[in-house]
Image (cartoon, rainbow, N blue to C red):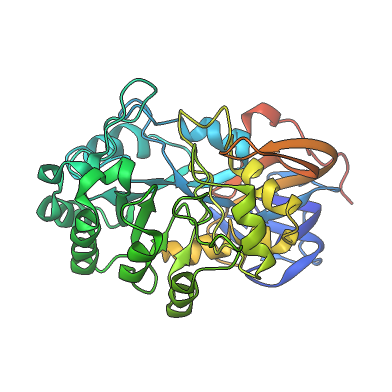
Length: 390
């Protein structure tokens, strides 16, 4: 059969299928068409020799801010894709019901890479997040817009995957848990998961967790003290274990202030890996300490998390959290997205939000992406072209 694209020679790591071997992957009509050693390259419109590289399902970054030009924290999703190998950027509450349609028309629909979104329960989303102005949108209860949020989420189910709320001293001030309770009502009404941000108390980490339902997501889950998931003796708090047992999803959401090596070491030492690894990339952390998705993944690789589970945390696990299981996999018939990665060895300086440095011996690097079954990496469009085919 004539495929649109065939990748040959690469080490395919697809945790959704338990695959870790050198083999071929073919794409046609925007989807994965075949995978295996017997894939024929004759008649394919494009063949790329990716020998020596890793082929993973297209990376999903579950926590980004890509409402470029519409909010002060938004970055460009396509530029981020080229840099970080992300084929699906999930915007987490940059827009609320009052401005989501602008996000949809002017950014999402024009993007060549996939953008999905959590809709903020606050009317204008995260509207005042910059170096010079920082106002917690959940602090102003008059901005909570449950009726509007239900209407907009219902009308945009093709793009909206859940409801977002931010609580904590910086995000909700003295409003405490009330914005979370309102957001949970919205999520229940539209039958969608909720993603909850947490920062400094109040409310406490435990209070937030105790309200979350199976399938809901706690982002910034490996944050530093205060409101860390561990106690002063390095033990996991009982509320964290109870929440995982009932199906709450733990997402990293690195960002500007929400990931600490100390917390991560303790969590991993206790056998508690994150369900999802995400960058929370935005204008205030894209130059550090988060930088991008592959840097965030690299930190966990250097902390001792196995490579296949690191990849799973940005592919199949993220897709399950989104309830979009056609993503994050190279199963035949799935969306035709893939990321080409390399693992470079050396001495690499990583930093967390507290300023602690970790010198790691590995770095995950994005070398190219496939989007919708076609090679999409303008910076290296000539790379990986097969020289001769039998």
